[in-house]
Amino acid sequence: MDTMAVEQNGINAVPEAERHGRPGDLFWPWAGSNLSLFGVAFGVYIVGLGLGVIPAIITGAVGYVLSFLLVGLVAVGGTRSGVPTMTLGRAPFGYQGNKLPATLSYISNVGWEIVLVTLSAQSGAAILARLAPGLPRTTATAVCFAVAALVVIAVGVYGHALIMVVQRYLTYAFVVLTLVYMALMTPRLGVSLETTTGAGGWIGGIIFAMTLLGLGWVNCGADYSRYLPSRSSGRAVAFWTMLGGALPPMVLLVFGVLLAGGDPKLAEAAGGDPVAALAGALPTWFLLPYLLTAIGGFLAGAIMDIYSSGLSMLALGVPVRRHLAVLIDGVLMVLGGYYLLFVSDSFFGTFQAFLAIVGVVMAAWVAIFLVDMWRLREGGRGYDERLLRPGGPAVNWTGVATLVVASVVGMGLITSADENIAKVVGFLMSEELKGSTFGAANIGVVIALVVAGVLYFAATMPVGARRRAADRSGA
Image (cartoon, rainbow, N blue to C red; front, side, top):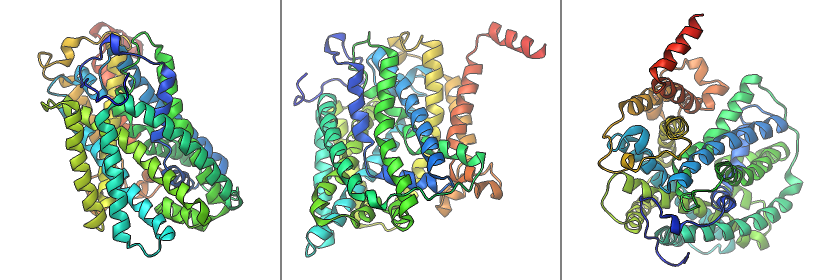
């Protein structure tokens, strides 16, 4: 496939003649998009739950693998059908009913585009301040923001083929630069951390790790697997997606945990502003490579988001071509990034809290999606094209009702540092629970996933099977 030709497929099923590649190719886009230096801060966050070095590493690894396994299972549906994720959502929710989760998916993707491009601009400006002390900070920020936005929009417009190539080479570069960086920082690492929490802290660490990583990508899983031949092994598709998404950030998480054990002050600073804090400990000669690593890691994630947000827009029924949808998203990304960088002093924290709420809904969504795909669509092979087009069922009330109920329960079990949002969420938690490890881990995200899966499974169980299950429980 020509990587420099603009992708013509939208949310239609990719024709078999255009499908190519192997499941192992999925490693690269997911690895590149999750190699940002934010992964170091994630290790610091998990340690902050009261976990020592070994418990923090174990819980982080389990959470990362479990959450990206969900992304991998969603990806199987893309390979089987040739259709992107949020279009497949029409099967369990109906053509019109799917617009609720598709809207939230779109908001989540565009929001993360804004956040990641903003972080890349701020990171670039912080490092340029050391490389060129006389350069005004506003100018440095504006230049980095313009370059970052242009790269993300351009790659997103060209589409799938270019994304797969760009992410592969970005991953190569990031791995090398990250290893050099970690070698330079080795003297600051240590293992002097004690576990100050019980079993609840371990569970909280796993849940927290899931919310930090894979659960934010479940609404994109099929977008990058739909070009694989439909005969591709479902296990291989799920495995390579999971490995690409979980392994590279796991290395960064281990580094963050060891940094907290060796240099607590630097780790604390890295938890708030990882790029600037970690740059301050580097020799000047490595600042330029470090700049490329920091900015590139954020941009790799933003590229994936802008591509998927365009597909979510099309799933909403907006009558535009895919590349035009990306351009519209790019305009929103630029406007949002400009606001965060040059206008607002407090919006960023509020916006992150809002994204946590969206994360609850998407966790409930993925549970319903997977139960529907594996139980009613024969593991993705039984998708009926009529379900996915305008003439299909308008609303599947079972799916929509389950999504609403599970989302409400989940929002009642998360917390927020933003005072206004804190008034809306956490209504099912006592004040004591809000201040506990479980409260800090936002367990509502995983609770929403479990509740949605159980409710949808029970609601779609054939009547005879329900009666047999009731008889067995009565016996």
